[in-house]
Image 1 (cartoon, rainbow, N blue to C red):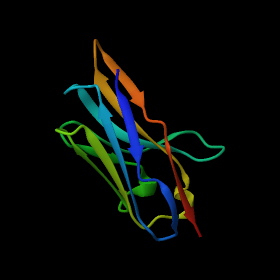
Image 2: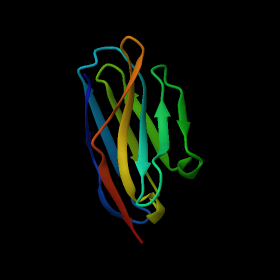
Image 3: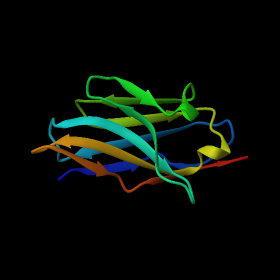
Length: 118
């Protein structure tokens, strides 16, 4: 079983920055992909950014050039640096990991609210 603990959400003005962090415990060295998703009210959950164990990164078009995902494999942590935030970035942000355990199992964090005021 893997536990994900997120931190770093909050309220920020448009143009501001926030840094989200997620720490995974209980997985040992079996984490493959780590990612951040978000869900705004009335919308589907969407991928924001993901990073593989080897460091390959993928971003949603809407956040390219503004958000940066990073991970520390030794500490099983993933971070999302969010700059130039816009009101449309307002959502609950969820940490996500894939773990190899008799196949591939995914885990979600509890979510952290990010609110960007105009």
